[in-house]
Image 1 (cartoon, rainbow, N blue to C red):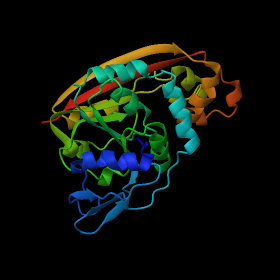
Image 2: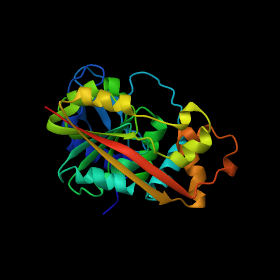
Image 3: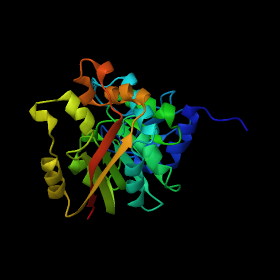
Image 4: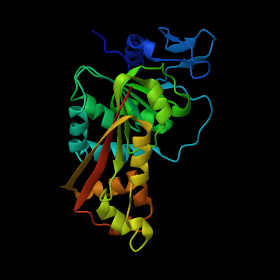
Length: 278
């Protein structure tokens, strides 16, 4: 049997889950035809890209993140640096999940979490086109969308789980999209997150220390029931991954002489915030 192209495979996958989608212009139900055009009753339309993703942006947005950054991020995450975090998130979820990863970047967190949940359907959205192109390249078995959370292309109450991993949030939109009894899982840095890099990037400045207290309090204010779990671990970092880590995180951008950076190990220290829907 002839293998489907990425575009054709993505069309087939989205057709199975077309009820998730709403037009970002008029918010009505969408349909997807065999040629890959998604349209609503008001004739607003969007075409499946050849790489296998949908672009739902209603206005141009300049992204500060490059193709090279997302490819570096994919390599770092594929190394296993975030495996304990991804396992912890998967443990919080049931097997049959409709998962939306908001600010998904190149899709590695979503793909690796869904790999532990065989019945889960994974959908990723990011405002960065470069990130979604990379996601479609690396992980063709998910639904990838370029879109703005302030005007997302999804129906209300479509998802059992919303992920927001080290990324900006839109809590009102999360609550609109979440099914009753669903979960929003937000991951935010704790004070020790990438502390070895932080010391070198911001030595002797106020940025050398970090607090997520305001972010955590805002999350608690947004959901009636909230659980906070801290996860901290340190892993050995191979020499070849150091420049990739510097490239993927804004902290690394503040280091002028990146070749002088030595990171034999790196610490992951995060709070996992779990908010439940009503």
